[in-house]
Image 1 (cartoon, rainbow, N blue to C red):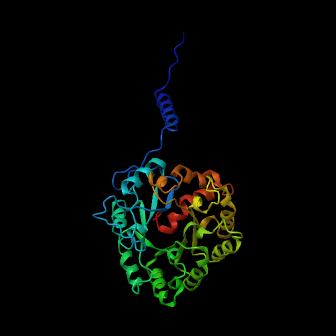
Image 2 (image 1 turned 90 degrees about the vertical axis):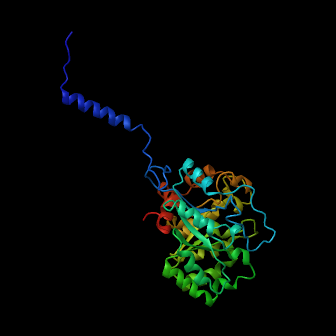
Length: 329
C-alpha cells in the first residue's frame, strides 16, 4: 500500500479550513454590557420604545398617582431586574423607559434604572403640563443621565387640555429644542389638531405619538379621526408608535388584523422611517394587564403585519429608535 505524504503547510491549511467551517455553526459571540450582563450579538438593534417600570420597594420609591387618589399599585412589580431578564432572553437590545403614571411626577425610580444600565436605556419622564414652571422642570429632568425627554398625557385632560397648544407653552417647546428633548404624547385622536398647532410652531422638536393616537376603530366612521393622525405626517419631526394594537382592535383577538387597515394608512403617510415599536410592560405584568407576550409583540412586526418589507421591519423594530434616542452614538 502506498503511503500518502502530506506536507506540513498542507496539513495546517486543512486544519484551518476545518476550523473555519466549524465556526460557521457556532453561536455568535455575546458582547458584555457595562454591568457584565450578556448582550446580544452585534446586529440590527431591537428597541422597545415604550417600556414602563415601577418599583418593588414602595417605601424607597413610593407610588404617587396624580389623578387617582384611590389608586392601588399593580400586584406584580415591573422592576428593573424583570425588564433586563426578559430583554436578554428574547433579544431586545435596548429600551426607552417611559415613566409610569403610577409614580406620577416623581421620576426617581426611572433615574435609578437609567443609572444601572446607561447604555441599554433611555428615559422619558413625566412632568406636570399645567405647572407654570414646566419649562424649568423639563430642564431639571434633562440634567439626569440617560434622560431623553418627557411624556405628556392629554388623554387624561380631555375637556381641560387648553395647555396643549397654549401660547404660554411656547417657552416649554423652545426649551425642548434647546435641550434636544423628545416629546412623547399619550393623546386622543380628537386632540391631535391642538398638537399640530405646536408642531407647526416648533418644527425642530422631535414628537412621538403613542399608540396610534388611540383612534377608536369601533366608531361608526373612524375615518375623520384617522385623517387627523395622517395629517401630522407632513411634519418630518413627528413619529408614531405602532403599539397597543390589542386595545385598538375591535375584536381584541391576536394578531389584531382588524387594525391593519389603520396601520397601513399611517405607514403609507409617514413611511417606515418614522414608525416605532413598543410594548408597555415586562414579563408577567403583561398578563395582569391582559396583553400578549413579548414573543407575540415581536411577531406582530417581524411576521404578522403583511405589508412591511424585511428592511422596514428592522427599522421599525430598532433602527429608527436608535437614531431618534441616540442609541447609535
